[in-house]
Image 1 (spheres, rainbow, N blue to C red):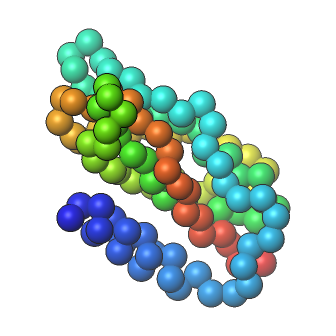
Image 2 (image 1 turned 120 degrees about the vertical axis):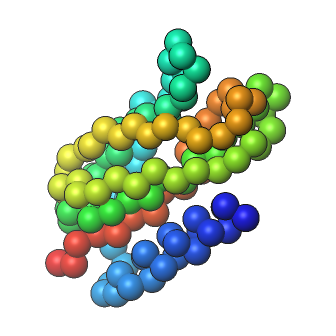
Length: 116
């Protein structure tokens, strides 16, 4: 249910983009990892890279959370804002899921660029 809600929110956010499709490379995620702190808190972190010639207003990084057997436990989204063209921006967000989460992977990145 949470995944469906997240997809509906993402669809609503990006439905009003308008204009022509963005040409050129799209935003990607580098140096992605999941970290567990000594107290047990977990975070996903990475760097969003905008190789496009247009400024990136908003990106939603869709992440799949996995257990130690690579079974899907949950999904989450991380929003990254205002990434100028040709630059990158680090992100970090707490994981709000049960203790069985051992791994994470980026599933997709949705991007909304500035109009030319």
